[in-house]
Image (cartoon, rainbow, N blue to C red; front, top):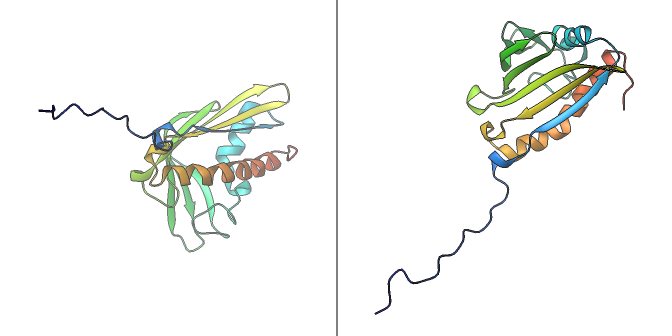
Length: 164
């Protein structure tokens, strides 16, 4: 009689890249100012440079700000949307936040923005990771591959830098 378990053990089919294997998204820009001024421009004045017409919950007329431990968008009519919760604040060197614009903390990813002096001013490095926390990890990452460079180029222009 054949052994019930004698059939060859097959390896599972390789699946497409799973959400926990998605690489962090890293976007780096340089602004022509010192570290402290670069950090301040990013965290104190996003309402002056963030492209609300393209990257927001409520659209044109709303504004984004860092308020206490939140990154918050406020619409003209007063409605608010929390984009993220800051859990590590190290001015003027970096901050880290759970990130969930137009969603909830249940579906959050993570961003870390670090500021470092370089010859031409300050390097601003944004690392977006934690894709496994997104509702649709691959689609979320793909969206940010398009969005973050556009957002950071607006910041560079606001800070007086040349836009690539």
